[in-house]
Amino acid sequence: MDGLIICIFKAMQWKRIRPWLLPLLLAVFIKIFSFFPHLVEKYYSTGVYPWISRVLRILFGWIPFSMGDILYAAVFIYGLFSVIRFVTRAFRRQLHRSFLMLSLKRLLAEILWVYLIFNIFWGLNYDRMPLGSRLGLEEKMYSKDELKTLVGLMVSRMNETDSASRRARPLLAKIDTVFQHSIQAYRGLSREYPSISYPNPSVKFSFYGYLMNYMGFSGYYNPFSGEAQVNTTIPTFVQPFVSCHEIGHQLGYAKEEEANFCGFLATKTSSDPAFRYSVYLDIYLYSANALYLLDSTAFIPYRESLKPSVRQDLRDLRSFYQKYQNPFEPLLRRMYGDYLKANRQPQGLNAYDEVIGLAIAYYRKYGADAF
Image (tube, rainbow, N blue to C red; front, side):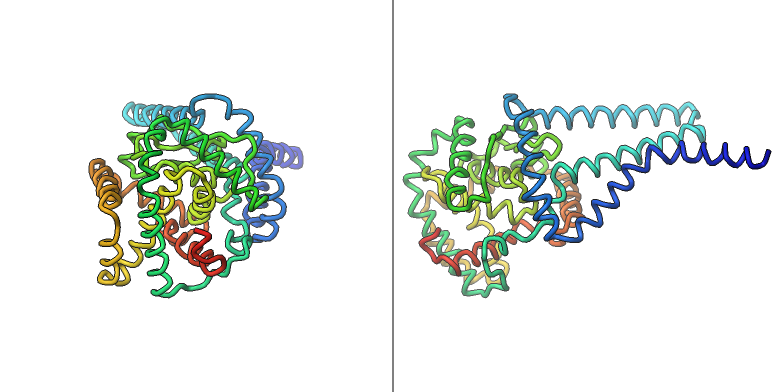
């Protein structure tokens, strides 16, 4: 009799554990696998992932609006409904132990499956080999003189392309033009770097553009739908680089500085002067800010040498973001910074600035003419 009770108890325990076994084993495997960048690069980032991302773009790319935005809205509504239901039961004193345990199990299961889908669909790219080493760039600590050289080069390039970019800028008012030129830029880049190819392209505007302004974001990549999203409410002269940055994420360059560098490589090869101006301005913002923090006096001559029209663009961009400043933005940005730190980017939001090191390494190898 005792043996029968033990068998029944074990069967009940196994019935409870069984639904968790596969996802738990997969989660453990993914975590262990992530500790080996060479394997991630070979079998995931350049093996399985290109097919996963391509399938997602085939499934959702033809839809003219963002399915990822709709998915996030549905998740938000579901979460809000769950909170309301929980609070209602608490108010009615109906939070029994069985309900709390069931809710906790459901929440843990949802978190576990989101973790698995996120990593399988895209997240493991955070653990791939560094982009610089794959492109044969020597990344090392850069000097103040090298930083000044980069700032000066960006100033020169912005001044040179300013007039032509303004003539081309009205076309950017049609967002489809930005997306098509971004796709063409990556096609041009793939001729130089065949590993950075972009089949079945799909770039879309986000429904949440104005909301993203309050959050301080200009675009995002949705790993669950494979869509690159661009905030089309930001000034037109920065949209080309943002578009190319998000495509970089889409192609598996998860770290922010690597997506920035992919955006730089693609945008600078564009035949559209508005695109080239956009990337020069972006790299200028990163490098000039770094120089200002290092030596504010040394920064002044570079700022003063900018054409008046370029300086006006910088003022317009600053005014645009100041208009949307709010008490919640620092909190949201801190949360995003913590997300980046949790995904092998200990610099948090400063990870974006790391593109400076890649740009200087690129300059060391190819010289100013490559810009």
